[in-house]
Image (cartoon, rainbow, N blue to C red):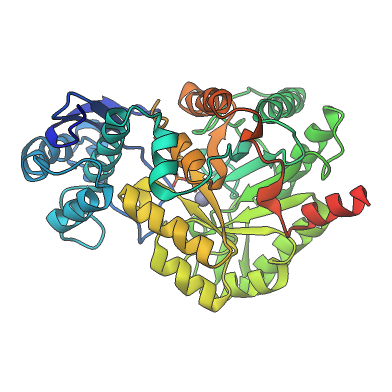
Length: 439
Ligand code: PGA
Ligand code: ZN
């Protein structure tokens, strides 16, 4: 007999892909079902996202999580005991109430997100369903495999700021299966590596597994990526397109943008002009955080000029917050939202953000963090919520591959209709070009 009463919660300290401590939580239900989840950690964080509780001091760079682990083992475990794990919204409300700060800084976003996800895993296990199916059933969505965005070159805060732009990625909307996306991406990654090697110097990778960016300008990275796509025999803009995360809050504020690599400072208009030129010259289908989080004027203006051509994603700008998505829709800022569970802090708040996105016709991109673990919960969320897209970094490093490989497994369970080609890029220039070609 299934009994989803939460009987125990326990946390331990584990280690993430940057060698930093993080929180893992295990939930056990009265019927013996268990669930487990780990908190990821960002490096280029939005100012309005949930805050991880770190111990501070000199040990481990101040990054230890003993207090966050203690908060789960003592307070959270005691307070959630006896609650119904299948009532995710109640669990998450209780967590929010216990924390009682705007950004979850008292119990810790890391303690809270790992608990929220672990409870969901346990409830799915009690229901005898794979997590993606459990999520699809309780949200009423039709599960689909997401279209991946995969990093080829790292940058920004993930690569010692060696280039200003944070992610140079590709999407393969023209692929007919998830497996084909990975194969095409692997070829492009190889070709990009060969180009970096040919330039001389050492090949290395950044935090999310993309090649270490040894370039003289941001545009050189864009150019190299385009050439690497061609090296594989693809015509850029057909099956394969480019996606950028500018992460502009990392080098811009108050409408001023300092491109350190090129030693120049741009104002808001010049920054928009630069991005516009890139959109004209390269097969770019998506740009994330084009302007800084404190520059709504810039984001709105950029969306007005380019929102009909490309996908414009708010990450630091929207921090997985439903209210901010509603506000952005009112103002005409962005047309897509990145969904990071640990940015909101709970599963329920992330679902609310995606629901808000749906209300306004905004696209959703479920995303990992730059500090990750082998945890694959977000794959199940992307599938079960029919989010449409998934961003987890590059096609190397096992904290990334764990997620792409999990999607392959889920795809087998889903069957033939699992993957919807290109649909997430509807209404972009890429989709219009496909329609024209089909005529
Ligand atoms: P972060 O970056 O996890 O370091 O915040 C990821 C992103 O900006 O998309
Ligand atoms: Zn981002």
